[in-house]
Image (cartoon, rainbow, N blue to C red; front, side):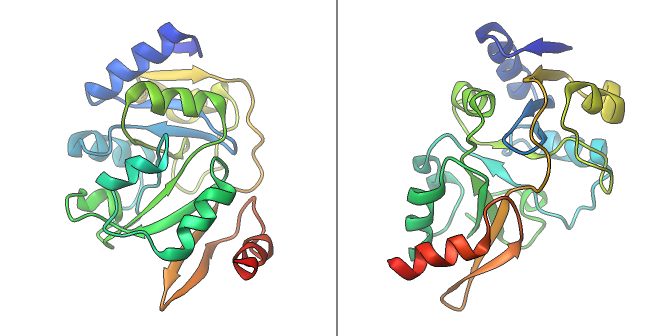
Length: 205
C-alpha cells in the first residue's frame, strides 16, 4: 500500500508498526524502513526483507532526546552538545545501549545509533507512533539506497506493508555517524555533516 503523508496515512502506518509490520518512509537522506525496535519478530522480518547480516546494527530515529531514556545506558558528555547543535539533522550518535535492547537491534555490540530526523514526514511518523522507530535504508543490503517510492517498491516489493510517499529524497551521503571511545568523539562513517564541522563545534565548547 502506498500513501501520501496525510494524518490518516500516518495513523494507518502506526497501526501497522504496532502489529509488527514494515513501513517505508522518506528521510533527509534516503527512504528508510521502520519497524517497532522493541518487537523482535518485526526486527527479524526487517533483516530477512533486506537480506541483512545479523551482525550489523540497526539505526533508530527518535522524536526528541527524552526518548533516549529507554535506549541508552548513558549519554557521553560531548554528545549533549552535539544533540543541541545538530539535531534534528543527519547526525547519528552511537551510544552505549540499554541492556533491555534486543541483540539483533545492536548487532550484539551493546551500542545503539540514534538520531532525530529533520525530514517532516519522518518526524511526523515517529511522533505519531510515540516511540522510536528503526531507520535502516530501504534497499536490499549492498544495493543502492532508494530515494523514491517507486525505487523502494522495485527493490522490496510485496515485503512491505506501507510506503509513505514523501516525494524524492536528496540521496547522496547518508547521515554522519559518530561514536565515543576513550574519552573522544570519533568518526564511524562520513556523511552529510563534515567531521571538520563537528570538531569545530567541540573545540569551541
